[in-house]
Every structure is written in structure tokens, then in C-alpha cells.
Image (cartoon, rainbow, N blue to C red; front, side, top):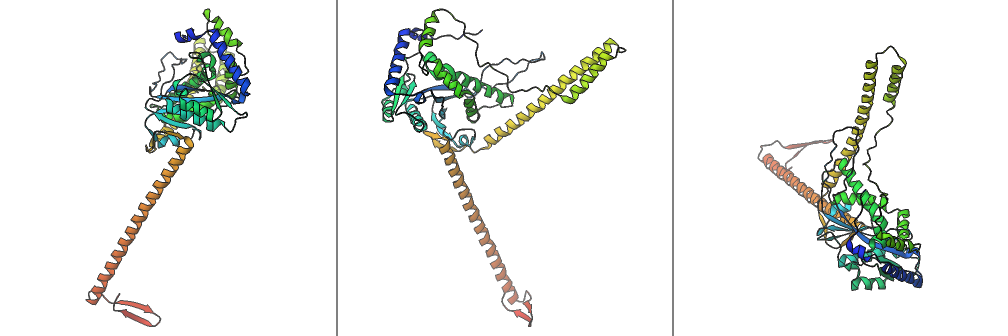
Length: 435
């Protein structure tokens, strides 16, 4: 059974006195400011490797190996998340590596409209991004705040301790509350409970993409799956459990204190609640027609004593082999259908114009989509203008040709090279000298 290593800094920080002081300060703030659970928030960031999942064991009936090629896009992406002791989660704040927002990102319909996307040269956070996230947090929580203030619990990262960050907190009636260093694995709700299933479901989503034929997992694929991954991980019960296990809400530091006190003994960690499962290969179990025939044949073999044992044995083998092959064939058809659907979606995404939308900065998905719509509208208007110009030009050219032809015809009639035009009406025939 695999055991997790505890970093030396974390081991040295696990002192009862430090944790007691943290909980005493936390209780004092909650009591003095009258903070209710719905207004207690925890924020943290977690990193992803866009195209790297986790190794999995695949159990197969046959002895031959089943190998899947896993793309390894090691490009970094970061999600900054915030959850409340009331069980809420705000739309994510994504940090992607790059310098320009691409239009195709905002065509991803799976993204929440209030999700924010920003860029950095590394894919990780910095002071400027930390402040931008705080403004995003304020926008998303100010309307749901019940009391007069919000309590924001976070780790001691440098981007959370800048003058601009702290000053904005006080201006917006947000109480910043930093945890002791190197103790997030015990005290931070997101770190203790939520990020584990988040990483699990992300790895599972990548595994499913690979099994369905994806050969290149890029930012587009990451953006298309991250919202579904979050919905599975950020369930209300999971969020409430996170605050309970870290002693914040309901306020109860005793389990944490006892856990630190017992660290001196080597303990075997409890089994991971989020075991890896295979991708959604739902093997058919009811092949009605074939199973009915197989049951009848099997019954005949048992009832007919006149059959030679070897013959009956071979028939039984044939029936079992046929059922196995039929099952595999149905599964293969299902997998092929999923693969073709995945390929079609991937093809459509890659067919999108790779137009840059904005250099740097922070964009909400909603604003990004508005910019895409405006660009598409301007492009359509430009194309319509070109069409109108081309149509007017063609019309002028046609009129010019008609005019020149009529002019030449008149000259030829005057030179007697063409017969005169005759118009027939009720009064007889008229000859036109000029036409």
C-alpha cells in the first residue's frame, strides 16, 4: 500500500502550540465580527498539467497487453478556487500560459459565463493576478453575503500579502486571514478534501479522451472538460465535509490537535476514497437473442445423453467463445461511435479561426464571448460591404457593355449594315431610325 511522504517543513511545523494559536485567533475573529458560516470562505490555487493524467491498472480477460498512448502536454495551467462553509463555490479563475487570449477558447460552450481567464508567461500566479482574483471573488460573493463582512482564509503565499491585496480587502469589508505556513495539509479545506477528487476527475477525463481517440490534448480540450470536472468535485456535501474536517465549521479544533499528537507513531493512511476507475467502457451483459439461443443449446447438451462427451464439450466452448466475441464486437462498435464523435468535435474545434482576441489581462468567458460576437459581426459587415462593392461593380460593368453594344448597333443601322428596327402595334409598323 502506497504511503504519502510528509515534507520536512510540514513535519517541523506540526506543533500543537502553533495550531492552537491559529484556532484561537480564528475563533476570536469569527466571534468578534459575528461571521456566520455562509460568509466564511477558503481560497487556494491548484495546478494542472494540461495533457498528463495518472497511470491506471486495466484488467482485461485476455492475456495480451492493451496499450493506450497517453499524450504528454506538460504545459501548466492553474485554477484559483474559493468555497464557503455554507457549501458554495464561485466560478473558477483560470491562469493559462501565453500572451494572447485566443478567440477559440471562448467558443467552448461548456465554460461557465462568469469563469475568468488570465495569462502569464509561466501558467502560475503572481501579485497582479492575485489582486485580479480578489476582485473576481468580490464580484461573485458580494450579492450572497448575509452578514456585514466576509472572512477569507488563505495560505501565506506572497501574492496574498501585498499592500494592494490587503488594502482592497479592507475597502470591500473582507477580512483576510492567513494560515500558519506549511500546515495547509491539515488546516486548508480545499487542500485537505476538495483538490484530491478534483485531480482525480481531471485525470479520469483525460483518460476518457485518450480512449476515445484524442492524440493531442491542448488548451481547448482542457477548457472543454474543466467545468465538468469541477461539477463532480465541488459538490455541496464535499465542501461542507472540507470545512468540518479542518475544524472550521462547525468550529472544532480537537480532531486536528489529536491528529498532530498522534504523528509520532507511523500510521498507515486510510484507503483513498477516490479510487481510479476505468473509462466508461460499459461492457454489455444482456445479448438477448444470442443468450436465449445459447441457453437452449446448453440445455440440449445437458439433456441429450446420446452426444459424445468431447462433442458436447466442443459445442460448449464454441457457445462461450461466440458470446465473448459478440460482446466484444458490440463494445467495439460503441467505442468506435464514441471515437468518431470525439474526432468530429476535435475537428470542429481545430477548424475555428485561431484569431487572437486580446493581449494579456483578465477576461471573463461572458466578456470574451461578447468580443467574439462583435468580431464576427464586424467580419460579417466587412464581407457584406465587399459583396455589395463587387455587385455594384458587376452591375456597372454590365450596363457599360449594354450601352456600348447599343451604341455600336445604332451605328451599324445608320451604315445600313443592320436592318432598321421595326415595331409592330395596332396602327401598323413603325421604323426606328435610332435605337
